[in-house]
Length: 338
Image (cartoon, rainbow, N blue to C red; front, side):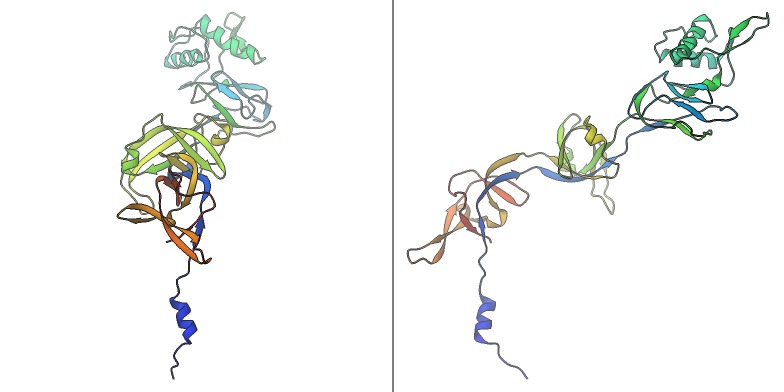
């Protein structure tokens, strides 16, 4: 059995529902938005070369957040000082006055990264021993001594007290606290060489307009950060999860930015500008042979709702809004949504 619908129901189904939007003053952001994320900066780990029989940290000398420089005392283990030098440090023996070899040259080169300013002669001379002795004295220790063949005491450079930092400077992000029982895999200190940064992929068109040194804005949550392009990578083909384009690296010295955890999603805004103006939704904009226009809601003399064609000039668009450049509309006017 079938039954024709009620006339009112059929009429309502064919009726057009008018949807209006209000002209408002707002910021229109015409910048292009890209999805990016935070990446971890580079860090180096300082490990002990050799350890005492009972290896326990008895003094922690580099607090987290402090600046590391070559020659710093990174830890005291069972009363023994451990100095970090910029390597490489191919030390394989304790050194005494007159010892010669490539390991001596490497030590002298590493000592010069601390500001020692000694000649890299390749043999242990007075200048070398003096530079080492100054490191010990600055940390409150005496350079180790041992009996010499003539019955006197001579200075000796213990290789166990010197470790390779892998960098000349950086920021300490972690250290082994007092009381830690360490082994050869325990990090005495972790040093951040480069801070966390953001990356995003720009398509071929946009990436061709970007260059190192350009400023870009990065949004993380409700916070905006001023960043600078550090590098624009080579063109890469697309994958299942990423469009083809170039990877762009962004850096900032703002601690709040560098403190964002790796993997944090961010929005990168490139090009365009943010302008404050009267604005309407883009869906209210119509076009004909005479240009852009809207249908403004009005009341006729009988109080009936009508819509009048009003020509408009669009200054900028972004995020679904159109900024208006002329005075054809006023704040509070209502316009028809297409």
